[in-house]
Amino acid sequence: MGVRHQRASRQHLAYLAARMMAEDGVPDCSSARKKLSRQMGGGHDRDLPDDGEINSALRSYQALYQTEEQQDVFIRLRETALEAMELLQPFDPWLVGPVLSGTAGPHSEIQLQLFTDRCKELQMFLLGQQRIPCRFRERRVFLGGRQTQIPVVDLEFPGGQVEASVFNEQDVRINSRGNSSDGPIVRARLEKARALFEEALIAAEDNSALF
Image 1: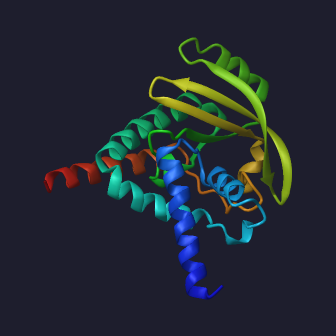
Image 2: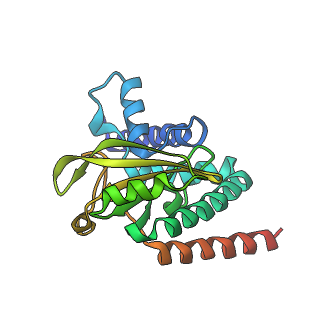
Image 3: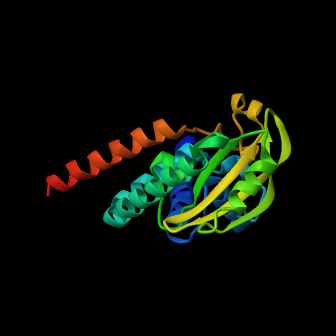
């Protein structure tokens, strides 16, 4: 396969992955790649687009097909993310995923990382929040070059679903990945997330003023 054809093929696959995330409720790039791999019969992982290629295609797709809808959803999810981070402030919350990157759509979850050695206290705290249903589970992530099991809390806020992955305090210095093929996770604490949200509001107002 020539370089030009290979690049075009990756771009096409990135577009298909982006459409899965925008329209079919596929939650993230890693899940979209896995679905593509299954559709291709497996064994083609090296040909699949990376996170950057998929997110670039997703932004293009949203700009073409979901401009107003995506902006409304994006603002609602950012507001809910800030609400969740303020609630979880004692447990060092960081915002990650599509709400932070600006690619969130109607099916996106709000993804947080918590860094605390007080996991039991976190559970008791959340169980005491009567207005916010929660569910505890575990998942595997790559952390510091090794796969490990971590606690996860699913929270049902009125403005959206929140998935909070719980790490030890010392893990804040290590950039985790959901899958061995994913890139490092970009994340932001509350103040940075709030500043990004304010920038998004200003940008939305500026765009509205043009029409």
